[in-house]
Amino acid sequence: MTSLYSGLLEPGVRGRLGAYYTPPALAARLLDQAEEAGVDWRVAKVLDPAAGGAAFLADAALRIRAALTHCAPSMVLAQIGTRVRGIELDPHAARIGQRAIEIALGDLANDAGRPVPQVVVAGDSLALSPRAAYDLVIGNPPYGRVTLAAADRERFARGLYGHANLYGLFTDIALRWAKPKGVVAFLTPTSMLSGQYFSALRGLLARDAPPVSIDFVHARRGVFEDVQQETMLAVYGKGSKPQRAQIHYIHVDSASETRIVRNGTIGLPDCPEDPWLAPRQAADGALIARAETMAGRLADLGYRVATGPLVWNRFKPQLRDKPGKEHVHPLIWSEAVCTDGAFRFRAEKKNHSLFFQLEPGDEFLLVQEAAVLVQRTTAKEQRRRIIAAELPADFVETHGGVVVENHLNMLVPVGKPLVSPATLTALLNSAAIDQLFRCISGSVAVSAFELEALPLPSASELSGLAMLVRMGADREALDRACACLYGIGA
Image 1 (cartoon, rainbow, N blue to C red):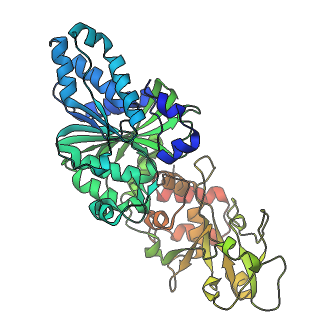
Image 2: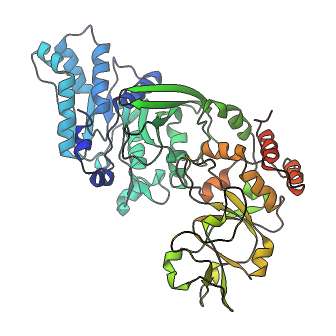
Image 3: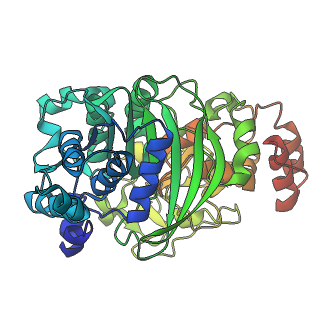
């Protein structure tokens, strides 16, 4: 019943509204996490500010009922009516959510001789003036970017950086609805843990409601049919002291069946706006422990991160298939960065050309220094998430510079770097870095922000790897050296 309305929507409408149904197994798991965090069903007041089909509220009402078995049915209904509230923007969904609760409590209403109270109401949670009145604020808020009016942007400024996302706004408003020592429990994309757009929100949570537990969700095909992002169940304690939060990996085999694996813990970084390192599997524990001790970053090794400056479809007339005499330079696409770590000058995909004609005013597109190139988009299903290759200095010099397309990151030396581009490339292409990046990244993007935040060994610690690179060691030897640097070697 709780999934009926979202299931009836056209996929495009569902995506636009961010209206994705919550499998009962995930709703139950998130309520379990909230209970473990201290929610007492005997007295708790519960709010879902984006109630949808009331998946969380129906289950919460049943838990309150179970905690009040000593009370008369009429008293139980009165308690639920007083302590459970859902707000839903779409009035049709609000009616269906209310009906779901009425069905769940139908026998209780019969015993009490009175109807189930109104629990779900139509309204806009983001437009209301919240009161810190709830012991638990729970839900699966809508996802997606939203354009805010100036007044709203000022209102939510404390958790905003750049583009606003609906689930970030709902997280902010949930903190305002929750009592001191209350619990916020949300199902959201994992991108909140790492993306730069959520840096201010991470800082807000670290100050006001540090994480208590996080479950990373792996759903079998068909359970979360339309959601394209990785998701997590996260529980935060308002006003609690920061501590290591428990991490689990939850396998959703069907709408009602889950398997839970304990993965370790997460500690907040010194600067909580930075990405939060979180183990995605039990084997990540040693890696996380070592990485948390590493103060080094790309900047400390003498590199800055920039994005390839060419957005090619804005310059289509200037693409060339052959070199010219003047102002025509090699055009470097993401496919030039190969999975084996090699740079191969090529343009094999549709609409890609090998060269680019610079026009007056295009000087900003020309790259005239060697760099390490990193693909900007990779998926968790790929063998490696970070795919890097050295852009050779002699290639750049021979052609008087190159033009790098926007789907590549450029790790550019600042002055004389402390490690060579070849050594940095070997490190980035290692299995250890791949494992570490998967503990940071929550989306398909390999962003400059995340690359800059990667915990790295110091230049002196990398001297052994640098020697292996100079000796022409194979990938297996380089991987072993990098694994030892991160405490996961033999």
